Image 1: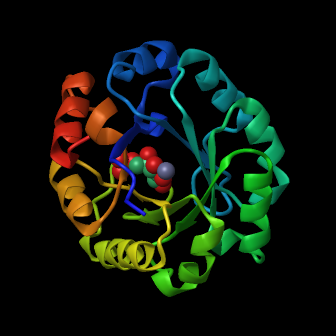
Image 2: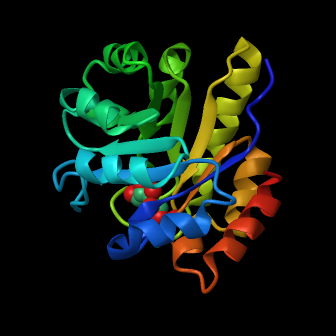
Length: 221
Ligand code: DX5
Ligand code: ZN
């Protein structure tokens, strides 16, 4: 089975939420997905937004919404995020004592099921779950904040996932999130990643649409 084609997902964590309609409109011509970072101040030391803002984003763009839950007990809010319009729901392996069950519930709700691993979590912990997921998110920074520096050593996990995907005929997407800009995205693409989340590199650029175009060109999207 062939690897998915590259996709770029601007992260609204770095957008100006007071101008969310304008921010989404700016990137709309070139985005593939829109990435929504949900944080609870427990799983990560930051607090962002919940289903209400995802639902607002849903009404502002037709892009598939890639919802990254950096929260404890994510299974308790799956239905709320689905109702809000999430197309992909990503939970953290570190937050789920029974990850296979949670991934099955996400798929059962009709969403794509994503599993994220923090920098300190070895790839081997996620590998047995690959048949249960549609997307593996390899965090390339410590989750919690935008604008941090990319951790190049995380690309070993991307390479391992890409090799397992090919070896077992699987079709899950490999997503990288954190510190993604043209150069780091190119390196991640070479390692086998196909979904590129970028916050600061797009929304904090002087011309976000140009930055998005450059990022697309860097990964061949
Ligand atoms: C960090 C979030 C990221 C964040 C990336 O915990 O998961 O999605 O928006 O931001 P940048 O691209 O600025 O590193
Ligand atoms: Zn994220």
